[in-house]
Image (cartoon, rainbow, N blue to C red; front, side, top):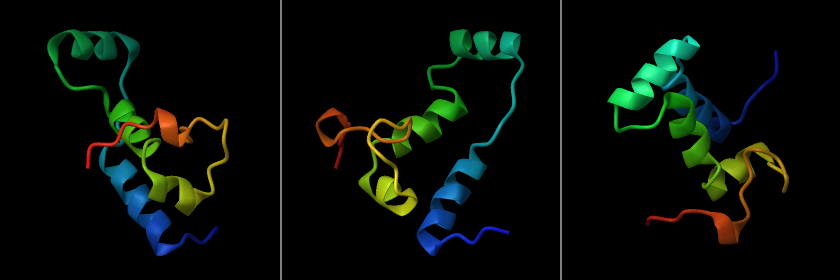
Length: 76
């Protein structure tokens, strides 16, 4: 079994909290009725903007989970 750092386990736990599985018709219905993005976007979208995530998992430029610093959304 692969070992993770404490920081990696934090992000894995965050993603696991939002883990879900929808059928395609349910996703479309949810998108029409709910103002919030789907769970996968809540996880991938937010973490791709987070420096600590990229550092913890050694995300390389060009990967799905790495956004260039000038393209990142920073709120705080």
